[in-house]
View 1 (cartoon, helix red, strand yellow):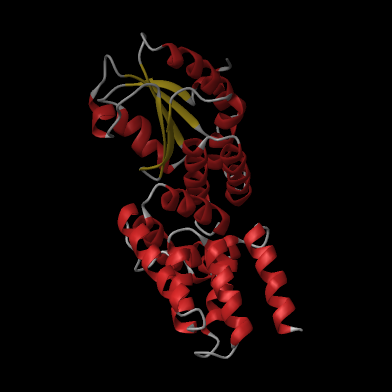
View 2 (view 1 turned 30 degrees about the vertical axis):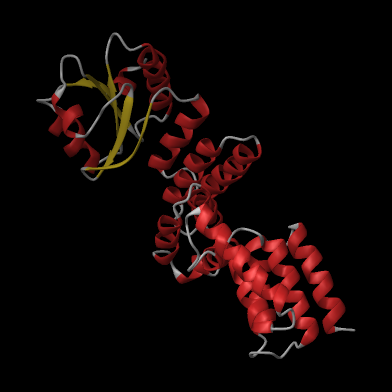
Length: 300
């Protein structure tokens, strides 16, 4: 390692941390590697960091802290496991990760600090990886990727929609609704975010208890069976069925209502049908079949 490189790769202590990291980060981004001699993953990560930082030629600094000898700052920063890496700019922590990482991910981490990568592009890559994780049956990995993508690019509608769907599927509709409410108007208008908003709207005012929901569904369907041409009952049944996740059955009732009287209650059935289509997405079988049936009525 050259002398110039060693100027940007140093060991630090709790005592010198202020000068080595906080003050130095006003001039150049500083990566802090918290490690310990007994930590196997630390021994893998440390030389990788040294190599990649040396290759940057002074665009970024690496500070290594042995937590066995210097546990103070690590504890103050909330560190719990090793290795833990923090990045500082202008005296503040701005990024970080825990555990050993592939070299490709560490390169991206450093590139973000030096401004040589586009956060939006990296966020898009994470979103695609999250979708692949979902397809592979790894929801926790998908949620992590969506969250990272949203951190890199708060304007990523795909990332917000992906993470919101994960919350909904875990039964935490409130968290999903809060995330969307806090988003910018542009993100809220993204088709995938709008679809999640519609999904949440379908779940409003329905019982959370499965047994109670089953009783409510049974009761409204009995009413419809007794009065099949009552279009208000049909709409009520559709809303309850959609809230129970039975969108296909809800579409059946709405299509029936539209066929009987499209204009009933200011086209309430058609409007709610479009909400279901938006929640389902254009590629779902429910949407495709429902749109085909709706067209056959409207353009007959």
